[in-house]
Image (cartoon, rainbow, N blue to C red; front, side, top):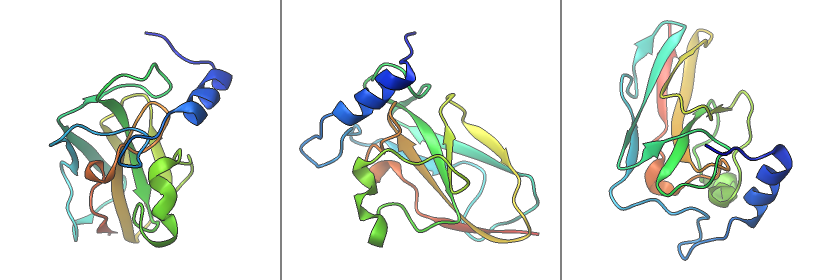
Amino acid sequence: MKYLTPAAFAVAALLTPAHADGHKTPNPAGAFVYFINIEDGDTVTSPVLIQFGLRGMGVGPAGTVDWDNVGHHHLLVNRAPMGKGENSNEWDETLPNNENHRHFGGGQTEVMLELPEGEHTLQMVFADYAHVPFGPDLVTDQITITVD
């Protein structure tokens, strides 16, 4: 398995061509992501186990060579829904890595997430090797959970 240096990764991310639908990386027909073990409206305790589901594609590490139909999970926490309103340009951009944008570039398919008591929004996004979202089909609806 080949890994890109940070400089090569940055150049590759900038040079990734856009496809006909406007997204840099298209997803195959029928592929989708989903939460395995939580749903909108659930009441949970912290730390929260969140399991990421994926159909029709493979999971691999970020920063590797661009493989067809392979990417990695991201979890959006307590922020506006992906690609809506002022975030409408996000489909063609590298997702940031911070408290609101959790990257699982090692190919992880679950996380134990510490969240304080109260309501929290979660949304899964599946992205390519350069952290660019595949497209609207590989994003879940935003859900709200309550930590008790």
